[in-house]
Length: 79
Image (tube, rainbow, N blue to C red; front, top):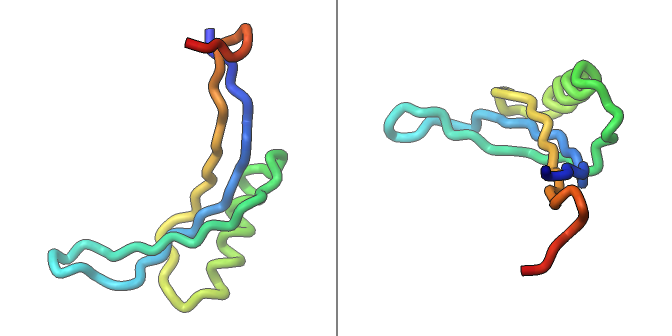
């Protein structure tokens, strides 16, 4: 069985910065690293919305990005 270890967490704001020729929205991501692993989803959303107010572009989505390490339960094995 695999063992999962949290490595890092970031806040990502996705903004619409225009429209592509095919009519689809053009999106740009702004990432804020070093988010506290203990931050609740409600807190992350509130901070994301507050930060989005500092930008002129339209906010599309607030995302929490988690990076986890995966290893065998007994530790790393070499092949």
